[in-house]
Structure formats: structure tokens, C-alpha cells
Amino acid sequence: MASPQPCRSSSLLLSALRYSDRFDYPLTLEELWFWQIRTHFSKLEINRLIKNYKFKIENYCFLPHRQKLIPIRRQREIYSRKKWLIARRVGESLRRFPTIRAVFITGALAMNNCPENDDIDIMVITIPHTLWITRFILYLYLSPKSYRRPPRLPEHSSPRVRDKICDNLYLDYGHLNIRPQNLYTAHEILQARPLFDKSSIHHQFLAANPWASEYLPVAYQESLKKFGKSNLIENCKLKIENLTWLLYPLNLFFFLLQYLYMKPKMTSEHIGLGFAFFHPNSQRNPS
Image (cartoon, rainbow, N blue to C red; front, top):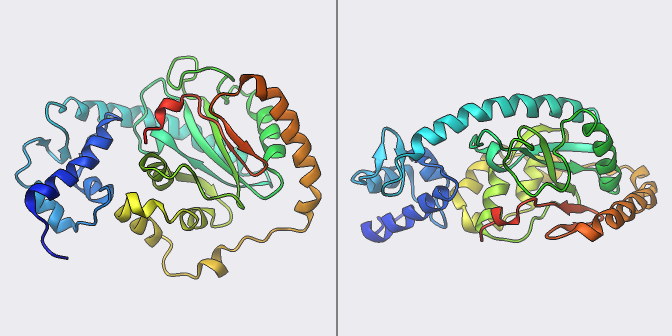
């Protein structure tokens, strides 16, 4: 790769810092390389470009006058440890559900960047024709145990929702392609971390969203490398049991039941038989 022009390249690198700054998250040099936006600089080039950058302390880089983010990040890492313990405990419970093939941590916790009062965002992947059946059963299972965040609360971070599960994204594995296609969504896809994955869903999820590489090329390529050079079709092909078609009418019934309940209160939700996106705070989705 030809040597980049220093001024222009430094400006391109700053775009990653500007994005992470929205979330009060300074980047290490390794993260700056991994999360670079629309560029593909090597680690050597990153180190050379950042060598004379003034706004860095220890291994953290940040925008001018934003050094206060370093202790904020470290404190949030401490808060996140507790939330991970809760998430893993819930994940072990959800693993027993036969219609759930994978559960991912998304949002701030996936980056260990949770304020103390944050809830815990999860993405649930189901087998086809069972999404709305599964969601109904999870509601009955999680709510009495006080794991699930109270419904219809507008906030994402407050004592009322602290450490509660926010199951705000459901997909069946026939609907793994995510929209809208923007930087925020690409980041969410690539930072998602599985609590469990029964059927190589994570690999298939990344393969279903190749467009994310246009925004975060290094992060996308490095994420795929974790799965080696195995044949995606052979190793990640998911056996769809014939019996799931028998569940289609029941899934449709539970979809209509929940849709009619939610319809008077719906705002930015995007739902269908094989997908459900719930965003308690749609302003968390910068383009």
C-alpha cells in the first residue's frame, strides 16, 4: 500500500476518534487501527501517523481537551463487569430454550462502556417461524424474575432500568441482514458479542452483512478471521427442521397478538414475522 499523505491521513484517522467521542470512549492505538472508518491503514502506518499526535495519554487517544474521557472509560469498565455477570447468568438460562440459537450482547456493554445506570441490550436469534412464540415465552420467563426492564420506559439509563435486560432486537436466522446500512449499524454488528451460539450464527451474521466492510473494513475482515477458512456453507449451514413450518400458524398468531397490543404505543419499532427491532431511545442511532 502506498504511503498515505500525512495531513489527509491524519484527518481520516480522526474520524474514528470523532465517532467514538460521541460515546465518551477514547481509543487505544490497537482500537484506532481496528475501528478506522473507510480506510485500511496498517498498524505500522497508524503508529507513524499518530506518533506526533498531541492528544494522547499512556495508550489512549482522544480529541482535543477530552482527556477526561480516560477515567470515565476506566470507571465504565468496572460498571460493565457487574453487568456481564448478570448477562452471563441470564444467557445460561436462555440457552435451555430450544427455539433460541444464539444470544448476543449489543450496545454499550459489548464495548465495556456502560454507565452505572445502563440496562443490558441483547439480540436474540431464533429458528424460523418461532420468533414471536419465543418472545412471548421470554416475556413470561424474564418478567417475574425481575430480569427484564419495565416495558414502555423511555430511558436507556436510569435507576429504574439499571442492570435490566433489554431484549430490543429479535431475528430469526432467515433474516440476519440488518438495515439501515450506516456507520452506527455497522459498528453494532461488528461489536456484538455472543453469550452463546449454538449453530455458528455469529459467522453467518457477519457473512449476511458484508456491506459493513464499506464503513469498517478492518473491523469486518478481522472479525471474519476468527472463524478461519472453513467453508461457510458446510460449517454454518443451519438445518431447518420440517416441523418449524408447522409452527408458522402459531407464530403468526403470536405476532398478531403482540402487534395488536403494541400498535397504539408504537413509535420507531420495526417488526415483521422474522424480525423485531425495538429502540427505547431512537436517538442512540446516529447515521
